[in-house]
Image 1 (cartoon, helix red, strand yellow):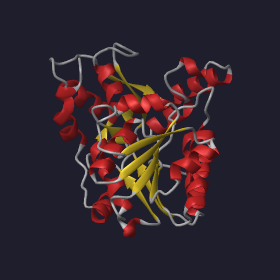
Image 2 (cartoon, rainbow, N blue to C red):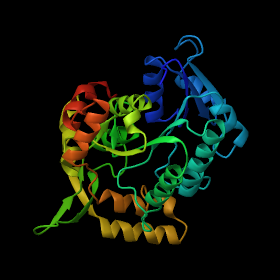
Image 3 (cartoon, helix red, strand yellow):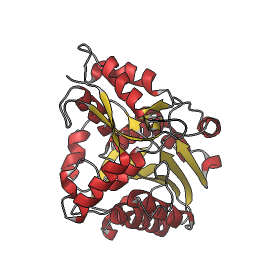
Image 4 (cartoon, helix red, strand yellow):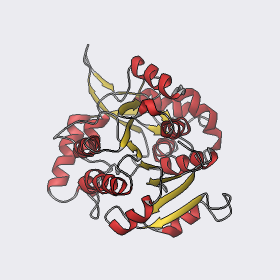
Length: 330
């Protein structure tokens, strides 16, 4: 792909989107980004930050066909990032993941039936009737796969970085700035082998390595029609990850212990609160509990497959977090 061409992007004001926009422009692409509120985009990337017309905003939503047509006009590729981790009164998983992707795929197809298209899905996506987050991501993937677009699907696990929501959640827990204030929570499960409870295994990937893979995919023809799982090489149990953050943050050590909440109890609680219309009271829903009790890692074979395709080998969480922990405000 000619790196002077224009790439359109959705979700550009989000944590991952901001990082990908920077890398796209550094690689020489022009970027056209969809934004519900253009002033928000202009606050993130003030005028003069990039040269010439490197970044332009299109005001609108995924439900606005005219806005999508303006977004994709003349673009050589599309990176679709929009997603939510929890439903709100104004947006459901089906609207954000499934219907939003359908609208984006249709707009790109109208513009160029063979446009290069990169989709951000999620690790563990499947036709899971228990977890609407996964099911709607799955439906989005299936719709894309039936299109004529030259697509690649990425399924990242936990994503961390200086400005990341996940990172700031961990830091706020450690510093006692967010509920439950006095301990570091995680969802625990019964051990598969042995007696007692344990935390799930995770393998976070740094956002800067993630966005390098996304940008590299645009010019990697071998990735067309491929689905890749993206995670870091370090497999660490969630309670150990919490302790690593606690011990690594500057300004001294913090003493809050990591305590597991049995996932079945938390799941029942979320279901009951949701049934009586109080789901928003809890900081989690049932789907988050189910996913939080399951491993979010990739195999060594998949790690090698990603490295071979894109030439990028992600860094383990402990080393990556240590490299930027000093930048996190107190």
